[in-house]
Amino acid sequence: MRVLIIEDEATLSKTLYDKLVDHNYQADIAENHGDAKYYLDIRNYDLVLLGWHKASQSIDLIADIKKEAPKTSVIVLSERQDKESEIAALKAGADDFIRKPLDYDILFVRIEAKLRFGVSNIIEIEELIINPEEEKIIYQGEEIELKGKPFEVLTHLAMHKDQIVSKEQLLDAIWEEPELVTPNVIEVAINQIRQKMDKPLDITTIETVRRRGYRFCFPKKVS
Image (cartoon, rainbow, N blue to C red; front, side, top):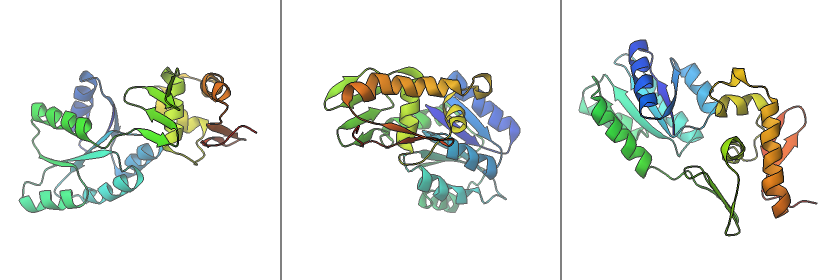
């Protein structure tokens, strides 16, 4: 599960990051809205923790998050204590509203509840089902053996269906330390998808767009 922390208070964001990692979540920190939009563009998040300060208008970001990633839950972490602010956040699309200072035991119970009962991330396209939570692919009722990074690459491209995604974007989205690996790992993952899935099933899930990247194109029969 991946979480984006949008919080300009450095000490709090670092504490949240450390606690999330201790709970076995993957996490990124965005110190401002520009960084947040960058991360949201290149990665798929299950949850966003959005800091809302008394002098901040960060609530406006909720609509953008929900427009681009409707399956992503948003929990507002607010310095504002009044009922009107809570109502405004929920009306703007927030899934939960928690007041600061944070009680971390309560925060993680609420996080787990949102991720457990949130909108399913299962992708269904005709007879193809991709279940990211269980790392499972089913086609025409049969399970396909594709795990690890090839599965994550396929899932990321499927979540951005019909969009061209570059190698650099795939590296940033999937690898924890993308600067330590070469773009060739993407080619290896794509080749495994084609060998283990496309060829045996006589389908095409991913097409190469020369010099630009890859695009999820299923359903598309092999000619």
